[in-house]
Length: 288
Image (cartoon, rainbow, N blue to C red; front, top):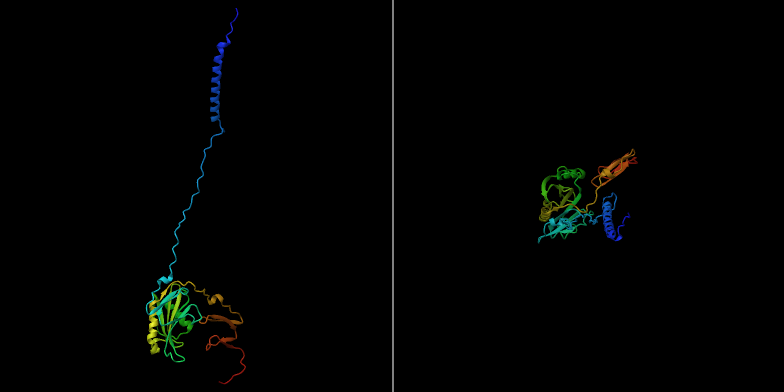
């Protein structure tokens, strides 16, 4: 018996459908394996860079430093205003007085010069008032400053003194100080600085000038305002700059005049003339 062959026309379409289905299944399996295998390439999300944090900067203008002169009193019809930013003070003075900053060699001192006792005389005394910055306070009170000045200047112990308030500060005032005529001088501490106010002559000493002397004293001390000095120089102390004594030399210090020196050990300071020294061999004696 002969086996019949299956006609080709009957099996062709079935194989074609089977082949297409196999290819689809294979493609799906390949995609699934690619997604699940370790180390396979994964899409990387895009991250936009962010701006660095910015520090807020204030655009406000710094507050200006107050002008010390804004504290000063206003001029009047009879007064004028003097301001010294360098020395840290301002005050009113009588309009007919003359400001003489060049009257003394120091920039830390200003002098007012008023009427003369006798304008027609070749030599005559005039009212003078000075305000001076004299350095740091060194921790002293006004009374201690006056006491220290007495010691250095060797003021007579009988010179009278009393406390007053000047420029809002406690002051110590000495009267009848000897000099070119008797003088009134006030000592006071303002902030970290020490000041003096000097008046010559004493009002009662020259009757024709008594009214002018009282006027300038009352006007200045009654209007004086202090503020931190802006241009005061640096100060040095004797212990910072003076030389040391040796076996052959002794140290002499004059706080009053502001100097120090060494002098030979066989000499002595002359108390009758400060700053002079005597010693050495005596070569003769002259009478008178």
